[in-house]
Image (tube, rainbow, N blue to C red):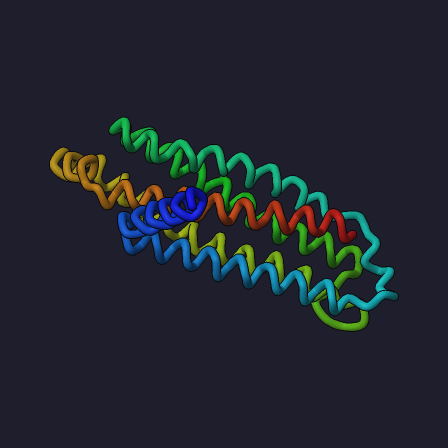
Length: 208
């Protein structure tokens, strides 16, 4: 009986937290679950479709993928500094960490394209007899997700830059509850994108 009551209490507490969330936060969580499912089934499809005689897959993992993994981990740190800077009303700090996160996202994207070039140099092509289509599809799908979040980062950076030039807007900006929600959404989404790539990267390492 105690366990049942405890479970009921936990269920009510979780539901209460869900009710307290901003609708946009709930939407983001639903989107992350959907994206996670897409990544999972894409990887499963690749694993099942890879022919047993595909010895051409035994190649050295692109160095650009390794470097990009380090870059994305660093970006997890920079994005985690944005919300604390906002809470401390350090607008310049908000701009700095947003800018660094955006820059690291751009570097990651460039390294992904370089990684595709390395795949091609290993004669792993998108189509044909030695097709590695799923390699491109999985990493490309991740890049699309990242680009979407980077657009959001750019929007927040431009908004912060515009706000810093107006005292009244700065006051409204620093006391607006929804502004905190936006930074919270950015942080959670970015961490999700980071975690997704790290999972993909280790899958590549273990597979190839």
